[in-house]
Length: 424
Length: 183
Image (tube, rainbow over the protein chains, first blue to last red):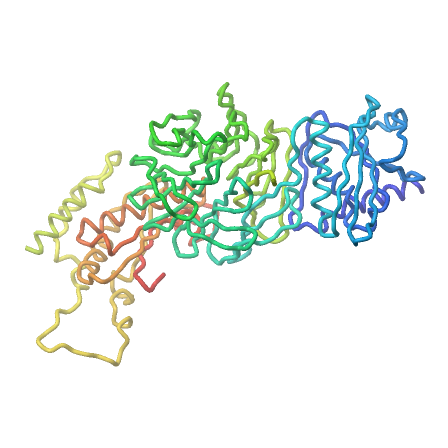
């Protein structure tokens, strides 16, 4: 009976985040070595739905680096102040343990305190206290998950970051922003004409994108906080493929104003236009290296679309991809060492990662319509769009190809994902 | 003189649009008699000594652009996979629109290039642009003015057919010529 109750409680807790999320996540693969971690429900968190610890568990499980353990109800329920019997938790197969509590404050806000323990070493890995309102439960839970992830893996977590993507429902296109777990989605722009290529400004406050609302592609810069939109490029012809310089001062775009599709630099307000490439080819999909010194882009100057790189100040381009006859949509990892892109193999379009130093290529998926890869800000996961059963879905793959998640939306096609930066 | 100009333009056009990697005889262009082709019959009637003012019909009703019997009502050019050249079967159509633009200097045209759904959305914007640029270049060589025409690309974003096989894709590899007021 006791285990049944525990199982039901666990199922309810696990179901809570999924039920409120429009994008639901299915994990289709997991890392080989996952850290077993016990996260005991925080006494008092029932007053603050949805459950903080359920969101933390879902975050850690989704990363593919953790396996969260089922914890039977304990009486009295331990908190961060409890004395921990490490041997007992090791016997429950936990290598790590999280204890905490939630308390209501006089001012109507809440305080959550938690501590992380290494049960193998028998060590207290420190903890944190956060003050939050009812509206900040998800954000707080993601911060706790980020804290645990960083303490135990040594890599900064990305649970507090956001993603942008486009949903098509019938004739309607919506540019949406959601938490990295797909929850809390908000629509930044709704239109009856297509929206493509959203690109986050480095500070995460603005999105550049291409909208077809004027019956042609025009590049806009959209401030998320107030919805103000600025035209960055609306020249004669097509204006497309915006990419931010790492300092946020300029955009690289592909314009047809002087014939063909050529790369230009322009300020986010549309000023200071400067031509970057001069070829008779299609030059598009520019992206800056993290140090801002180099621009990677797609060009068919060699006869088939391949990825090239050139100095951001202008100059000679060098070819980067050689295998195959169709390599497009380059994206640099945050450390600048690898390149995610889409390669065509026998009519199938698959996301791949190229190690720029060793020139080794790893194909990441076995799908056939991958598009628009983008790295998580910690470089561990790659978000991409693919088509399953005739419907657009988002998929996240670990940079080593081992962990795979799928994000689907109840009614509609999802496409054009872009993983946002760390929130400052 | 006028016929000569058109002949020169047609020759220039043939030189411009023939793709070297395609087996295509240039003879097709020589066979045409500029000014006497079927396209010529659709030219508006020259005004006589009395200018007629007709308030009984709206101008758009009389426009050959809307007349299903006129070649000018046709607006789409279709392409083979990964091709950008305007096939011979559309030459007459492009010539008729060039003539309309020449004779109506205030007319403005938007050419939207489109691709099928395969591949990168942004690269497809580039491919669609190459298609619409090709049509624009032909129209300019045939006497239309730069300021009359804007060529743009919709990439794969506005398919005419929603299917996922060649029969749909062949409908979506397309340039559409739209006149001001139609887009």
